[in-house]
Every structure is written in structure tokens, then in C-alpha cells.
Amino acid sequence: MTDESRPTVRGRRLGSELRRLRESASKTTDDAAGALKCSRAKISRIETGSVGIRRLDLGILLDLYGITEPSDRDALETLARESKKRGWWHDYGDTIPPAHADFLGLEGDARYIRTWQPLVVPGLLQTENYARALLEANPAAVRPERIDQLVKMRMERKGILTKPDPARFWAIIWEPALRCPVGGADVRRAQLRYLAEAAQTPNVTLQVVPLDLGATAGACGAFVMYGFTDSPTPGAVFVETLTNGHFLENEAELDGYGLVFEYLRSAALNPSESLDMITAIAAET
Image (cartoon, rainbow, N blue to C red; front, side, top):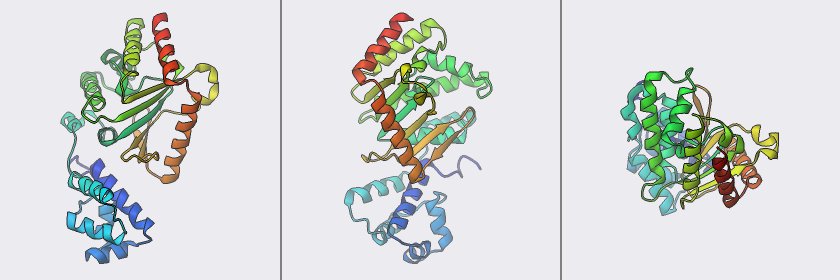
């Protein structure tokens, strides 16, 4: 499937939300198709993000589903209007796989981002040299000629934390991620100092889970949760593998990851204690 024909992240989010609203209202695809005077197949394509939806038709569906709150309707109308837009990362062509492009799309639209990282520093808080060292350490997934572009792209991502009305970012890191000798002593020391500075940014919360917690923390693989409203329940979860990534949108899965994050948050040092630990490890390096 070409880049132009793939559903955008926003298009899929809109479709997924319309499907959820339809099911919550106990309406069938036949009901939706009857309201729009179209085929059931078109409703299915709308709900998978394969085709867009006109503002008038969106309003008809929202009326059918009983959505009357102006802010909810406005948010969905904005999503529908922007569903065909593609982000800055599409300028990188085939440098990034589709799953990672979707990851960036969610990241760019998120109101808040919460992540658990047991082995490495979160991408949004990495220095350029640290990011480069990580990419060079994974030759199975990254060709050497692509590293410069990928490092540049990772640095561009960080703009979501400094733009007007930035995303709220909450990262929980396991202590081994701070002690892993990525790039050598100088790179790691600079990375830890950068983390300490970032931890004092108003929209960034950083906590460290100490190693003496035991195996519990290590049993939880890395994940990123995205919220697009003020609801504590995430709208999507991204889980990365060595060469690819997967999105989770099932309600039970989202609730499960939310519970895991809350457990890790309560087990971690508070932000002030975490900053002290980061500073101390940097001084040891």
C-alpha cells in the first residue's frame, strides 16, 4: 500500500471513535448507513479510516449516536477536517517504516504522553550523541546510511515538548537505563545532565524506579501511552519490538496498561528523589 493510500493516524482515530460511539449507542452499521443513505460498506470504510467523512454526514452520525456536548462534537469535527493531513515525518520518505510513522502521528497529536522505559532513556529526552549511539548499536534494524536521518528526525520529535501548549510528558525509567554505558562515559554523563534539566521543565514529570525494587519492574516491557483528551484512560498504546512496533486500542488492553503505569508510578521515587538519583549517577560517571 502506498503512503498516499494508507489511512492516516488521524483518519483511523476518527473512524475508531465513530465505531465506539456507534456501539455505545447500540446502533448497527445498518442504522448508520440508513441515516447517511449509503451502503454498509461505506460505513465500514469510514470506521477503518479508509475514507473520509463530510462534515454534514459527521453531524448526522453524531446526532444518531446522541452526542450533544459541543466540545465533543468540535473535537471530532477538527479530527475529520485534519484527517487527510500528513506530518513533517513524511518528508523522510521510506526512511521510516509505516508503524513508526503512525507512532509519530500519535505523538504529535497527543495531549499527554506517558511512558515506561526499563532499558533506555525515552526518545523525547535523548541527546543527539546518545540517540546516535543507540542507533549504531542496532545494525539488524538500522542501516548505517540511514542513521544521520534518523538522528535528525529524533531531534525534531522533541519539538512537541517546547511548542506553544506542549504535550504533557510523564516518563518512568528503571535505574538500569540510567547506568547502561551507551556511547561511553562522556555521552552518558551528558545524557544524564540533560535528563536532570528536562526533569525541571513544567510539562515534564520524570520518575526513576530503583533497582532494589527487584524483578517486578524488569518484567514490564517498554510502552508508550497516548491521551488525546483529559481522560486518564489512554487513547492508544505503542509497544515496540526490535524491528517493528504495534498499536493497542482494545479497551481492556488500554485499561491494563493504565494500571501497570499506575503501579510503576507508585513504586518509583518521587520526582525530587528521582532528580537526586539522576544527578548522583551523573557525578559517578
